[in-house]
Length: 89
Image 1: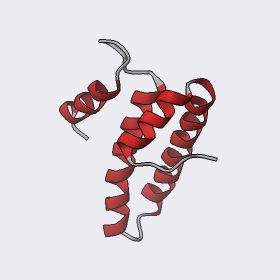
Image 2: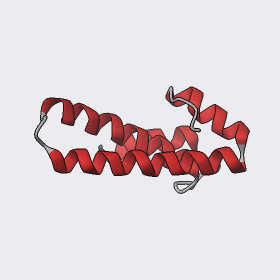
Image 3: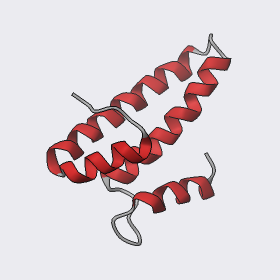
Image 4: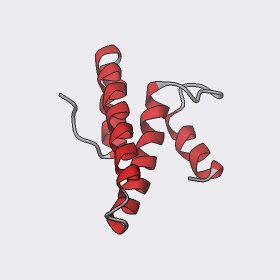
């Protein structure tokens, strides 16, 4: 991912002007990275190391989503709708 693309994604979910670490921004950036790596793994089926990294990213996003759901449900619902994700159990 390029800097400009990351900045555009972050701006969409920021709480304030210099926010880059809120759960919403992290989830959005992880989702973009996961989509990119998913395409890579589809093309390169034997790339096991990337697949392992992809699974770690998915778990990290899942943890962040659980945290956001527990702390601020309204923002959680908003993030899920905008990113097109499913509800975490």
